[in-house]
Length: 286
Ligand code: ADP
Ligand code: MG
Image (cartoon, rainbow, N blue to C red; front, side, top):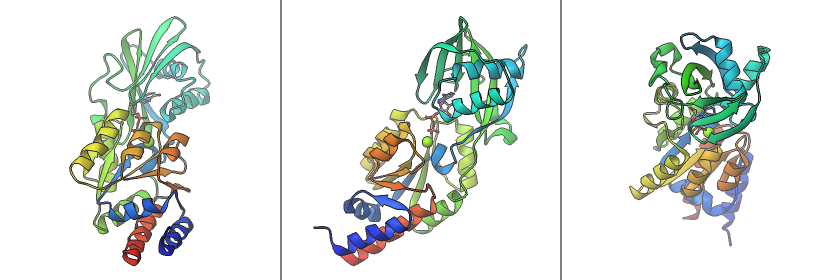
């Protein structure tokens, strides 16, 4: 049976806002040496807003926004939803995609009014400038490039705020002797800017969903005991592979199902308290 101390600890963790599926996960959490964070929706709020539109030569902000919004009309991705909401707020006429093809971690291609519209990062959009956000004022912004019929027409920049609880959480985990790493599908410049705000030194950017999983495997093979914390569909395989998978309560259902622990109110200070409870329980039981 589960030792009483562990049951008590599950209860204490629950009061801190963490749902723990099984006592063994708490024990595993007490032994981790590395905490790996997803960026978007985990360290950040995950509700991006359009901050700036930079049209290419011969195009207007309206052209770029209307094309992207049409392609993203049925998108479930927060970047796509922010783009369509912004176009609606500006009362732009937005077409409907006849078909679209979503490529996780890259963006999407859609046919709208007989034109091929591509919206996403440099791996997907032809002719997109390689590092558009070198401007220090823009480095915290996520660039989304837009092409029509194979020609680049401009870039939409989106801003996502860092969670209020993030900096303190990273500092506290580090003070507890833990190594902190950030993984993201976002561009390198954006990833580095957010990491710098949070004092995170180890950052891996421009990862496809499979790369996140591979990163967890590499850490474990190197002898690390790893907790991964994330929210997205693209985090689910990595959450399942980690020694302890932790999902944000605000995250997708597949992330919550793949995880061992769920932070119900998505407050990162609950992560710190749960690690503390896990360590104290280990001292009592072992
Ligand atoms: P993260 O790991 O930061 O949660 P994702 O894997 O969901 O990010 O996305 C990684 C990158 O792929 C985004 O920063 C963006 O460049 C591109 N991308 C993904 N989905 C879309 C979309 N619907 N529209 C435009 N770009 C997208
Ligand atoms: Mg995410």
